Structure formats: structure tokens, C-alpha cells
Image 1: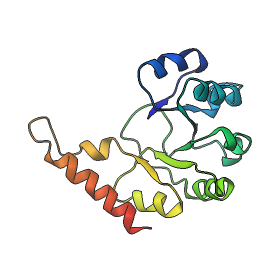
Image 2: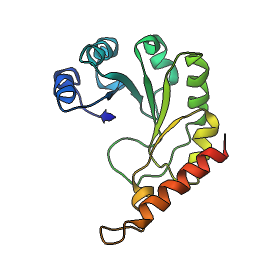
Image 3: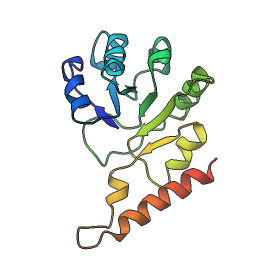
Image 4: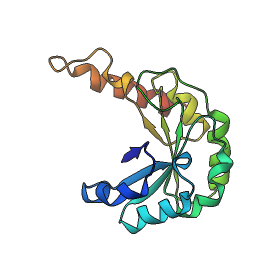
Length: 161
């Protein structure tokens, strides 16, 4: 599951397919032709994802749903790890309604931890990406906290369902 934050996107799709990506997610804001980008991702044999920055409304992907396998809702402004979570619950709920019975996942990326996981899961997200929260307290010499952190995030998300 590869989430790229580059522009242009299309020139790199084939390289990600050859590298073994199963899902490729590009930002709707990355170029003028998101429809064509999603078609190219699928044409390269991958599932197609579209990402939305916090300031981009859910409606920006309404016309793309039939080409989309995953919608990634950014809950931080892209660029670096460890940022503070931005509550996008309303956007997630709107997307879940827009999706209807289509088999589209809603993925959350940014600030996911045991406190925020139930917020996004309760709103309708079903894939959570965690970075800083997973690695907190662990090291190469002490990897046990990684598993503990993942279990804590999963337990918190499941409790909201």
C-alpha cells in the first residue's frame, strides 16, 4: 500500500507497479487529471487510491468513486511525521455516505494513536495508518513496545465499533 505525495504522479505509476505495489494512492490535489491517474493506476494492475488533504472537501472525489478502491483522508497536513491530529470526522462520515455500498476503504493517515483511533473508526474509517505512535518507546534493542502500541491502537479502534 503505497501513498505518494508527488506531482506529477502519472510518470511514476509504472515504476511503483514494477516495484511490487498492490495499492497506489495519489493526492487529488497532485494534478489536474485525477480521473486519468486512477485509470493509469488500475491499468498498471494495482488498486487505486485517492488522498484528500485536510483542507480539501469530500466532494472533490465524488466523481471518482467508481474508479477508487481506497480514499485516504489526511488528518495532518502532509510533509512530516509526529504532527497533531486534525479531526476529520465530518469528512469521513460524508465519504462513508457517498460511498454507499461500493467496496471502497476509508484510510486515515496522520496522528493516529489510541486516543484518535476510536474517533476515526467511529466515523467510518476502516484502515488506519500509524507511524510515530507505533514507534513510541521502542528501539532496535527493545522492539516489544511496537507490538504493544499496535495492539493498543487496534483495541481502541475496535472499541468504537
